[in-house]
Length: 119
Image (spheres, rainbow, N blue to C red):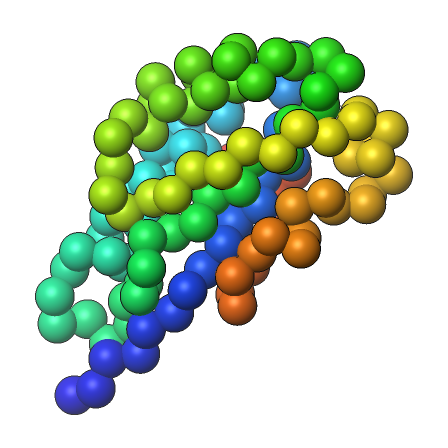
């Protein structure tokens, strides 16, 4: 059986996180980490990640310091070889207008999740 390998980016727009429960964001990140571990490490599966999952966090730099975002996300993700974290500050106006600034950074396969995503 051959194995199909993918390079995948997930872009999370960390916009309006103050209007959602922080526990939702934590659940989402925990689920993504779990799925990345499964797809990256499990030998014998027909579909696997080639490099680690590329997680791009686009956040509103008008309202958040990068250190705040990193502290929260790093607290959930920790040191995980299955995930690469990248942080991209953007103006809230750009994010609100749906001009996804993380899109040019993505790998061959991408998914976009807004603040309402709940696994």
